[in-house]
Length: 273
Image 1 (spheres, rainbow, N blue to C red):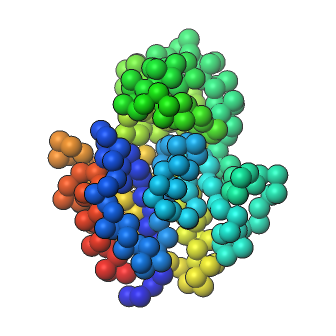
Image 2 (image 1 turned 90 degrees about the horizontal axis):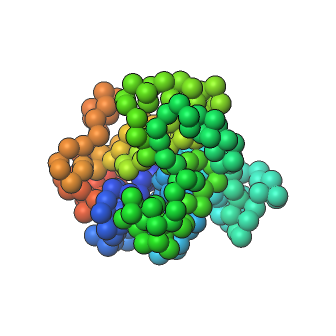
């Protein structure tokens, strides 16, 4: 095919193992992507404070999508090649911060209004110790996870029926709720799929032709991303179950969970490009 290729990937439970957050088993595929100059775009519910150190550890230099698509960070070096017109006021420490959702303050105000009617706990109502306990992160890492700018993870403690009403009520605030691997995420009317589509268009500008795109994920909040690409891949959970959707019947299912499965799928798919 020899078309320019992009790889979009979720992190927790996908490139990173669900329980220990390790990615060492993915090193062969990461090396292969660099050797072929294939951009690897990290797409996660994580914050920029969490993703930037990880990006550095991975040796990654590409744009990244934070907080389920609510925020895109584009390195200054990529602004010209991607044809992005950036507001200088939104450039911070070498990155253009493209806010695509609503500010966290606005989200928390809405959730505070809804607190009397529904049973849930958001990160804003939890201590760093609480967040560490619920995520399995160290307290230092949990502090980074709590540094949110455009979304709010919540632990849902109410019924499924109440969740439906909660989602309807959020719409009046121009918000939505998305299920992730560990939490539900309350955010603006945007998602990972929107961010992926935007970056596909920017890279089409850069390459001169639309790129062939791969995406890897494991959770319901990855569905919108997976539906945007030609080659979706699903990473199974530790119990062998995996994400299912009628639109993804032709998706490649990794043979193993976490970084091992990610490594296998990426090496398989980039040979089809």
